[in-house]
Image 1: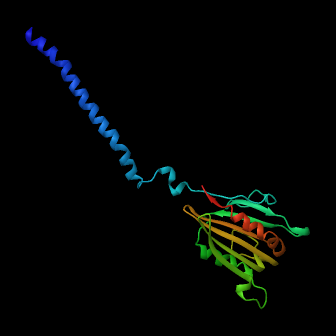
Image 2 (image 1 turned 90 degrees about the vertical axis):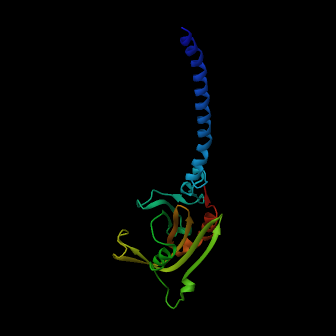
Image 3 (image 1 turned 90 degrees about the horizontal axis):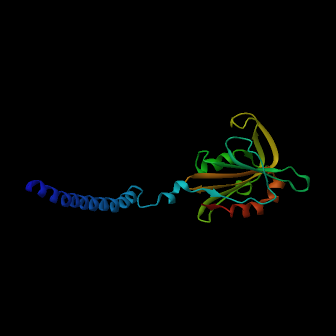
Length: 205
């Protein structure tokens, strides 16, 4: 009976010691977990990852939003023509591939320069930073070679004289954004200042 009483005396003490030991180990583990999480994300909070960055913009009130005519287009607007002129179209693309230079070269090839006109006068290009976003602006004018079949770039073309292109490529951490206005030269020229205001609304969120 004496040994049984000793067993019952030590049992609660042993359990108490084990509980304290487990509690200490759990505390050490919970304190170590945040550091492990930071290391796996290279010291950055996942909510601040560049992959979550998106580009926002605010078009002028007079531009009419349309249903994109192609699944490749992220967004689309009609720019009304002044004094009865035909409208221009702003097509917005995201991540369609190619570099900045290759896309600008392709756009230039969609136009025939006016006769006896130097390239510096019919195709202009500049780069700058707007709200911490590198942008590349290009303007072209002449005869627009519009594809009869947009999905086949080498197919038959329609020649549209007196046309112009005004476009910008924005570089973001998630890829390139393309904003391309195409239409009669008179209409594109009419909206030139508003387009400049438009690209200054670009923001990264």
